[in-house]
Length: 327
Image 1 (cartoon, rainbow, N blue to C red):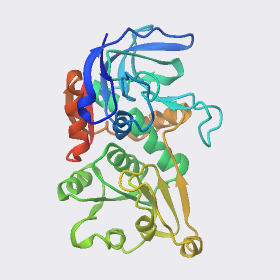
Image 2 (image 1 turned 30 degrees about the vertical axis):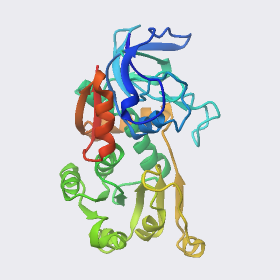
Image 3 (image 1 turned 120 degrees about the horizontal axis):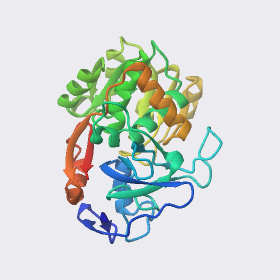
Image 4 (image 1 turned 120 degrees about the vertical axis):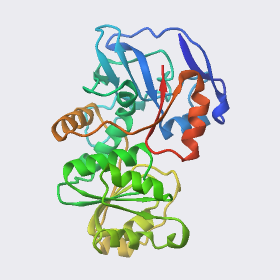
């Protein structure tokens, strides 16, 4: 079958179209004939060698296609071997495309529990873009942060897949959503998705954006701040006393320094999270059906043999929404 192969770690140019044997499913596994594969920042880290993926390697966590055993249209859940504890993944947990061949290919093998019906009305690109960011965002906002109707949510870094999904899920549950961005155009797009307002975090307001976000929230601190970039000290300044900071990324900073005394006097919750379980995914699909959540925003699509170009575009930060490979 055709597949994207990387023979080494490095920049986007290590991603080249090649061939690898068709996957053979083990007992309890299923082969999916893929129609689309969505990119995630996680794929960039895989390409760079952060997870020591075996070489040659085919990246890709997200995908949608045809279950070759049943002919059903399905989406792939990239959270493998989560385990029985909903509080955190077990020791065998891994993300598809880390150490097993991923979805930048014509076919992929996954555990049968890791496929779900393709949502009605979704295109192949939209279906492929849903699982990782949808599951990650759903777990962050609801399983971990307990976001509820009438609460306020600040989403850091409008434009990426998690951020756009957070706006739609937050709005669907009845929360007031504010975003941050370095670009007015992305703030405008987030508002069109359902955000109430947005705040620039660059330029003259670089050090005061938490106060600007509070001003956009009627002068009040937020119930929940979703931080996928690693700006903990500033994010806490945007919280109300007793608010919840939920952290799921470190795109901008790998380390954070917090003042301990103000943190505990503020009664804040600091919540780490990552991709969720099959039960979380079932919860996401149920939530979307009950709340009429729109499909993920698609920024651009590329053919499979242009995976390097797709990664270059993703890393540019210029897009709004998901980048998808069509297969």
